[in-house]
Image (cartoon, rainbow, N blue to C red; front, side, top):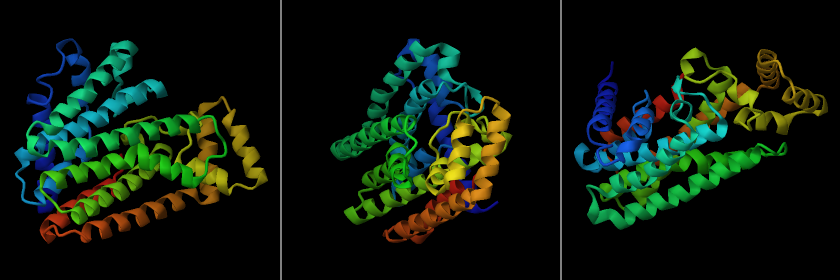
Length: 325
């Protein structure tokens, strides 16, 4: 095990400890059981780690950036609570979802309460930078909601282009990674060029992360934490499906249309997997992820962060890309 890996594990452990002991202290008591359920599921904690490592890249102590890091994790989980309701998902990270465990109404209110709680945590230890932090956070929040709406609109369209899909995941998923890095840079007093470099690192890493998520949803295994083929069963416009629909010849388009209506779940998943393989879609996904990873590394290398800290951040990006769940 490398020193960087050990360091990342220690950082994740510190995040988990903060979540259990301090992060939810002021959360409404009658919603605590629901928020505690979602916030303490076994997550990767990539977004708060990005905040911490970006801040530490400019010499900030971990404790100074921890509340802001957790604010990003709270915001992320707020979106998941509501996403799971819209998707009618029964599992999240292999465990029962909040709305299944506590009911839809309580899940909605819990998610609503998580948003102002995230804002409070963001500026808790950095009041001197509150204005810039809030501007950054609010921009991200609007973009995430815009991306979520695009995602829902795409459910009723069969002409979604790859460019439209990439813009949707940029908004829904990637800007949160970019903002996590930017928030760490703001706390660290970074200059504008370094803030942009770190934002771009997070943005490109987030794009690769989402494409990997789509890939694993179809070609992953039971360790993924979600039902394999879930996107297929929902006819969800994933990276795989959008590329297939854009590339398909007339015969393949007819096959896709037929599979959309297939009621046998195992058959539907199996035949979509076969179609994707025949069209070379898995390799397109892997190549796209690699290209985005290279762009993220170049953005990181453009910053003035010390090389040792760059290596730690770069390693986190590689963890995101090479994951299997």
